[in-house]
Length: 255
Image (cartoon, rainbow, N blue to C red; front, side, top):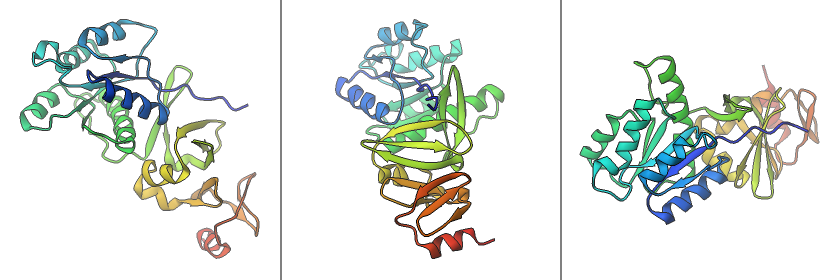
């Protein structure tokens, strides 16, 4: 059996219960684990102090129901920065210039305006993790990744960056789509339809590269090595071809 990657942990810090619950459900659908949902600054501090939770990223509301900066998400962000804590992404309804300036001074790994959908949230988290890794290596040069062509997974206790171009096959099953990587016994599940993943989560520049060869599967065209009237081959792996025309496959494999 293929080893399944551990899920990346995202701590949700949001004072509005309905928004927090929607975030939790969306994040779980995207393949993340939510170790805790915190509604106050005190709850967030307690969760971050709990070694058993160990979030990889904090999704942090700026206001937290308090007009006092000492009890807001800004205070927690400052504490995370001072303590060398996990990266954090601000999620807020406030988009005025003054708030943005306050928030960016704390060097977040991302800034999202509510409401935010699943694709934007997924992209922001992946970019934030990449931003954090650059910051650790080069503190003075940490550019935000504008359109990530990668995603992060956990294998054991380590976080690994995997590139969409390394995905050999997308396989739909019930309410999930599993990403199978080429030459690696690793898979990664995402909740949703194959159409949703192809049109919303795969980076736009790479979408034409994934051919939907049947109702359940899409194949990375760059990894196709052969084909016949019934199947598409990626090395020793064979997949049923029910949609892609032979002429299209022939054009793809022309030198």
